[in-house]
Amino acid sequence: MLIQLLTSLLPAITPQNTKVHLAQHNGLEHPMDVYLSGEFDEWQSWQSKRNFECQYVIGLVEIPGTKKWLLAGVYDSLKAIEVKGEKANRDIVYEYRRVPEFSELEGRLVLAYKKPRGNYLFLRTCLPTMVVSSILEQPMTVGKFPGYKEVDISHKELKTIVREGLESWQTALSSVAGVYLISDRTKGEEQLYVGSATGTGGLWDRWVTYSKNGHGDNTRISDLHKKRGEAFAENFRFSILEIADKHTGKDEMKLKEIHWKRRLLTRDSGLNGN
Image (cartoon, rainbow, N blue to C red; front, side, top):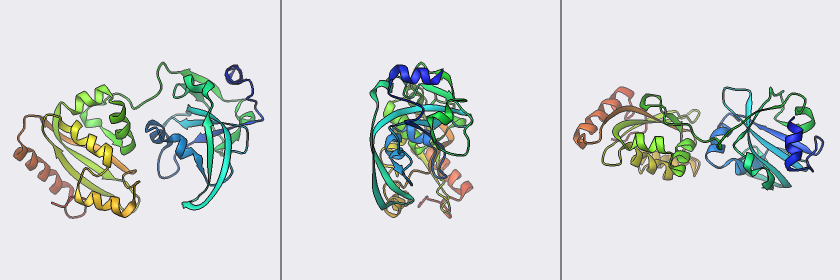
């Protein structure tokens, strides 16, 4: 039983003194993207209400397309601070710490649960139907490289891939030159950008730059940075339009890039300035 697993690690946890945060898509970003990028604790700390009035919080992240939940962490030392006006619709920020007893299960423990309407439930509400589905051998991370035609990743996922140096991605992307697409999915401002990458590092080297600064030193994307602030790239997605041998000349790759700019109208109504 789940309660036996929890209390075996931390006997002080009870169904009455513990809340479960079922983190789902909030209309802007999916918590799994946030978790994989290593930013879940900070993301969860900002709340619209005093949702964590209890001794412990179990943070669970929805695994997309399933009724399963990944353990992000268990938290205590909860302290709510009012910070009205600092973030839209987020008037409370919590200070807390991860309970170290659960560190071995973070990113590995998967629970099955068909949630009701609420996202902040006492553990006693969840226990009758929440069960342990599996314990992964390794903490969950971005999956293996899916093939060039299937690449469609968020900026947060790209940062995770680069930060962790995921071998299948680095090997595949550094093996080819190519034309890539950045899709800005920001509501009401949807735009596209087409770019190309050549040289010894291929697509990998170019995308590493985007993982670090978000704009890759492109003028119109840099303008978005100035307009929106540090979170300007949070709705960017990266995909690949065409690949080529790394020895393809810059002039030939530029012609391929121009072809896609014309087809997708990214000069007229997108983020390409040339």
